Image (cartoon, rainbow, N blue to C red):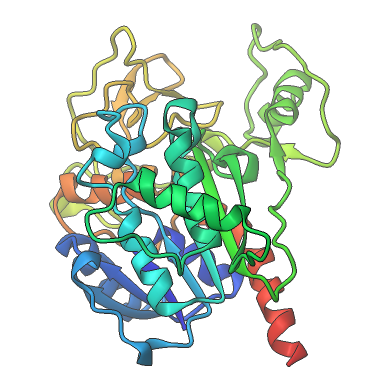
Length: 376
């Protein structure tokens, strides 16, 4: 059995299903996200397999009969550690890492996969990030009631330093730019993977796409030929040494070129694809360019101050990206429908893990677990 905490719209679950993990029990408290998940499990063209538990993870009383759990995944709310947030980290009420570890202790999964913003590992948050890594190595060392995290961490460090300590999980982590794995978006994230110590060590995948390869194709004209366009007269760009084995970063144009024209209104739309008026460009709010990966797609809870959900067209004009376009930039399949008003769908899409990135990280983990299962 696989379990996904804070499942959102299902981006992580879709990618992991492609990697081999399914069906999945998905836990999510947002009612619109739950509607999205259920619709995409039961539709004529389902994009997900599994069940949906509409509940706050903090309210779940984990039962031993849920075992055995193969994989526990969690994309805990990122706002406490986001560069655009209040930077409260562990003091933020939305910090739900304690709930993640409560589930790990109760369910004792074979593997754990955590995803969050890359800011979680930046210097100002690094002590808490190291605490997260240590907790995953020794989840059975529980925090005491009302114990400060620093005191709990000190107890784990003391245990880790003892002569007879044995980690319960092998833990590795890595920062990623989603564009390096074929996602048409610059999206910086950190992944943490823990595997039981009787398993081989997990190895993160190597990047498959690169900025250097895109610059090469823009300069030599291959990119423009692929789209049936003339190379711009000012199309000469700086070329960097390029790994021949990597593909070029995917661009916004690559992602959107075959979409039909958006509908004029939501009532007429299919695929969550309709025109939204009112986009404006101004300093620091310039939007994403067609021939480069998009800016990080945002949830839009407090607006999108960097123009992340705005597109700059070939003539220099700007418009809002449609929901389907932002979903494509997050590599959701077109069959995946988002429930709720535009605000709710924008939040679901912006908070999601890009499906293709989840698949890239999940594929070697599935192979590792499958080899262990077959060896029994």
